[in-house]
Image (cartoon, rainbow, N blue to C red; front, side, top):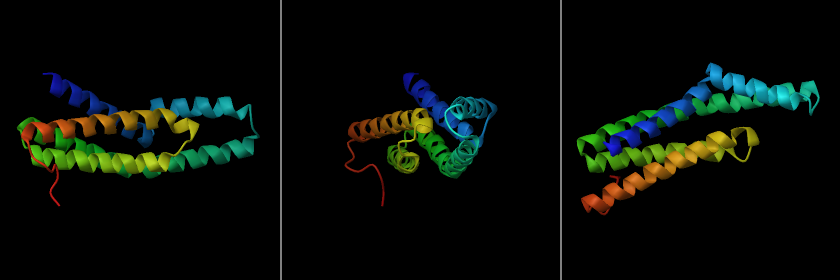
Length: 144
């Protein structure tokens, strides 16, 4: 079904982002290549400092991305089961967490690709939430 396929792709993208933050080989290699490329442009000591800061920033995002992934998995399961109010609440929590990550990323060039992916995921979940609310006819997607 298209909905399941779309949700699966979004969850895979979110999982990919969290794996990159966890320091998977693929992500580590791309970071090393970027650092090596930039090392020709600036002094080595300064570059090591930048690399350490980037690793620290990425690691600080890890718990938030993993939490967002858990909420996204629950949202998709609830959505598939037809539990609209609970699904929209979980989508909302996922969006809040991902927007927090986006605020922490800032405008750093090395994080631009991650930032774009997270924005797309947020937009997709926001659109799905709006669709669920409009189809169900409920005025509020979350319980407070």
